[in-house]
Amino acid sequence: MYVVIVGAGKVGWNLARELIAKRHEITVIESDPVRFAVVEQELEHSAQYGDGSELWVLERAGIERADLVVAVTGDDEDNILISQVAREKYGVTRVVARCNNPRNLQHFELLGVKPAISATDLILRLIEHEVPKYGLVHLLDLPEERLEIIELEVAPGSDAAGRAVKELGLPDGSLVISVLRDGGGFVPTGESVVQAGDEVLLVLDVGLESSVTERFADRSSAPA
Image (cartoon, rainbow, N blue to C red):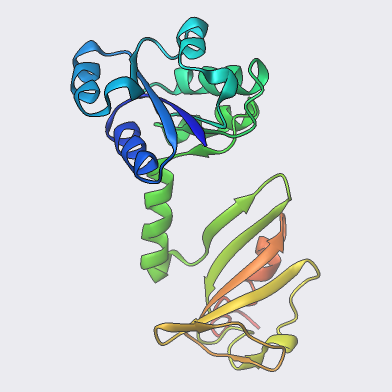
């Protein structure tokens, strides 16, 4: 695989190292002369100096034959531009972009730059996963397929606690795919009983969150 990486910061540089170790061919483009001098000492001919948002720089790096373009500069506007140019002008089918500011994720999506990776968003999801009080955790969103995978903790006093999976009363378009309990997990059958304190993974159609989560929420204090 030939990979063009635009941006030789910590992310781009370490990614280049890993890809080279896996025997892929890579070119890293860096516009800062000081940073480029450091990176070039290790990567040598695999590093090129220039502004990755300029066409001639991308063409010099061989973007026409790239199997994958990764835009990981510190500027979201540049990452969007590079991704669009790679896909629309040069026909690169696989493009990955870094979103530095999670507030800009919607701009990446609106302009068709997918996938856009936000480190802040990923860390937030890890925090939500590790802190049960957050309740629902979005593990994976698949907007093109209109599917999402979520994780819920079964609250004591919920409708789900003590019921078999087939008796949960989940809406059509939702499916329990895993139950995590006591440090382990298993794929449930319809007969498997869900217990309070379990963490349940579900795949569901977009728009079903509220009707699914209410089955796992504590209803013991709800008004009659």
